[in-house]
Image 1 (cartoon, rainbow, N blue to C red):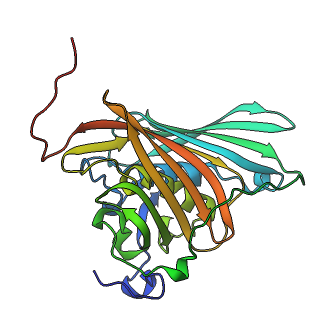
Image 2 (cartoon, one colour; image 1 turned 180 degrees about the vertical axis):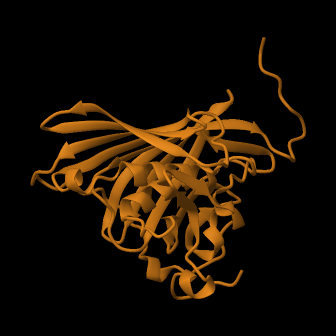
Length: 280
């Protein structure tokens, strides 16, 4: 795929409609082929799962007075590539904080959920996170992994490392597509989509030797991101016991807006010389 060198892909010019992960049919969300997991074609990838939960979590009236401070996703095994319903619950309804749970349902059964912590909005001191990330305009546009390009709607500018390169990865990302057809995604929703990319962009080993699908996503927001470009600074660590963690820092052109983690399930890749057995 060819990508322009100085701007995000104009997805609208390349498609009769913007690339999207879901279409709405009645009261369910029907996944498109772009939502398929790279690990299993019968499942939905973690990014589209996270972004759909984020879309269902937004509340314009509530978010006028409360900031989303934490967004935490748990994925219950494989989320099937089929129509999904959703349900929401209020777990805490306080004057200072509110906690909500959003659940995705396949055939009426829970397949993923998000806990959304909101904190009352108030003017308080600023203590910014120091960083030395280059501006996105200083980094050339490059091709990204096919499964993460969203039909040409996601544009990538690699700073260091990245998909397929073991070690810490730092990249700028932009997305012109839609999560739900006909709805422009907010920056909060885009941030929750890119939060799934950490274990792939900051992978610890060659993916052919070892695969590492994420089991959850946690984002702690300092503030909501602004602008079109989202920076992901990711690094995965493992202790040799079958799982690991991805440490993620998220920034925009104004600085760091969030930090996060993912729990990683580690398994032999298709090039692994042997399949280790669990201890008895």
